[in-house]
Image (cartoon, rainbow, N blue to C red; front, side):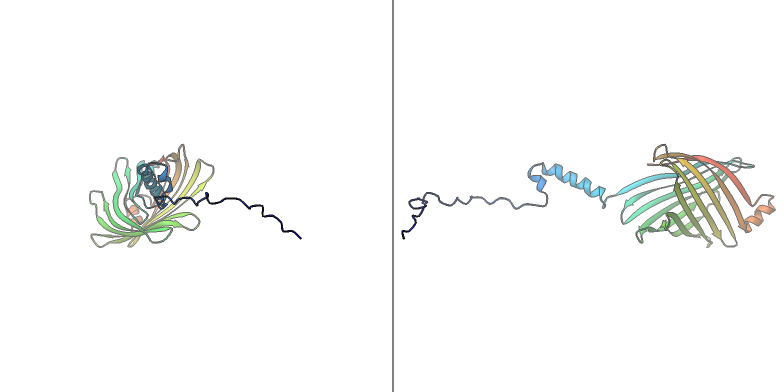
Length: 254
């Protein structure tokens, strides 16, 4: 039996030498592969913006939560409440202001707070600082409290105040917002002021319409009532211990 002929016999492979190794080794790939195709300076600027938008940045906000007129029996009033803050994910400086001016009687109360807030969990901040009353006999207070979001989306604040005369008081606030439509929101808010032998409570309902998220006019109703010594002093002065107001104003932020 004859052997089969080798089909590759006579093929000369000597001319097919392996490819030569490049004289220079390519650069090691980096974490920023796009810089091989785009200006590294522009890419560094884009990464800085990305870091700011995803944490680690410094932010600020100014909010006028209430800027309103209060119509009631007797003397009407103007009231405001707002705050501004500057900080990052780990702490922020906060300025809060609030007050009420009664027509024909001057300032019922006005105050300014300067606080430092630091998170103590995913939903609450611990706040500490000073409060200054701005009336003619204004007092200075040390302030310590918490602020955050409680279960069922209830915005909560609880702050204790110690005055420069040794008086201890507290303020507790709870607010909830019910979105009726994409623009119509009903806010309910309960606020209490507690001091030795006396107290005040305030319950309000405000219906606002967000023309833009940053600007919303509102109308509502507000019920205020005094207790303890504050109520006794009101009775001695011939005043009522409680009153109801129709309110209208605007809420804005930027």
